Length: 547
Image 1 (tube, rainbow, N blue to C red):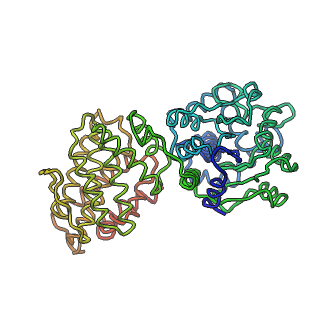
Image 2: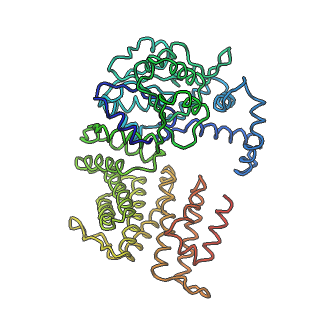
Image 3: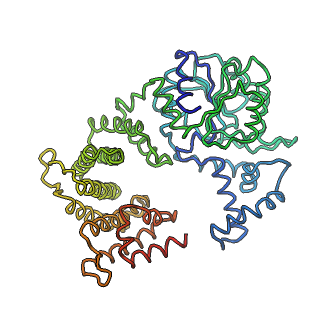
């Protein structure tokens, strides 16, 4: 079964019945930029390996150590039999509770809810859920409900608060099984005398039971690694009065953890698996099936900072793959905000969305609609007189990309629209003028990016200019039939080659993740120069092979 099946299941009871308790694991917060437990484990492993080798190693050496020597290292450092990688490495790397607390605080700093939590908030507001259990340290659901829906849920981190919960109450409840990171007693790494690591206290176990008594449980973003939690679930599965609406477990891959499969085999009529793309997309399917309302502070914006804040949290997190519905809602939020206030920030956001929507239209073979989106975005940016270095970079960055998009569509036979609102400074006549204009924006963007004031601007914004420059020159060379004589090179071709080589070096200096030169080498817009200029090909190959 999949997301649609689960969405229909949630939509069956009438609002207010709330027969399902929702269980959220770390996977629910990944799109908000919070790493999963597996990602933290891998980072700690890499940190330990670098300490062992004193930093004199590469990624291949780390992979070999992980495969052949890590188990031996782990065996030598175990605190008790059966300790998980997460608990061992967390307590090894941060030995004191205060150190672990600081680590979690830094991890969650400035993290904002993404679409999945916005959708979930609509389902809580629509009375489809009012009980949520979570193993997460973050406060993203609580933030979503308070900020976007003006709902103040009961948040229970420790036993003293849990004892006062009335489960049957309609008031939304969030129960944190690991406690709250603001306290030194972080339960995910608190050791017990009986070596039951990450054990839940009896009161917490009773609440899990109570929240499943007469209800169903939907598990999302959780792989079942906690012995205490799985033990509690195993116990309640033995009694017919618990999980009367079933245990519905969401998986993001076809690989099912062994212990979970064992549990499924023991209770095949109660446990059901659903294969989903992500937490965000699951919540989207349920939101659409239940037809719940998005928050009025975004659809009817009177607090404009919320629109900007949510947009930046979506664009700045790991939620890079936005669905059509997500892009539609972003467009609604921003257009309605722009109608009220035409600040640079909102106009830039609107143009960014025009780019996203245009790219989607183009990939769906709707070139005329794509051209309209690109052209509208470009005209929107012409209204801006940037009031900061960062906004200047954002405007030039998006202008250069939109001009490339317009040029590609025009070369394919799509006419460039006439000027909007009698604007005379559009200067887009055909694909050639669009590409040359894009390169002007690239050069100006690089110039500004190299100023002292621009050094605080995020690297991805500055890195776009040389990347776009490479693509624009490659398309210009292809469509102008440059570099076709293998025995000689013209002055124009030599200038293009020198510019692109400079761009590649610029990308290299700004590419801390060491991935964007590889991305450039695979970009269809850059293939012409990669195939026809040996100097560029050799430079790019020499840099990507080292990675």
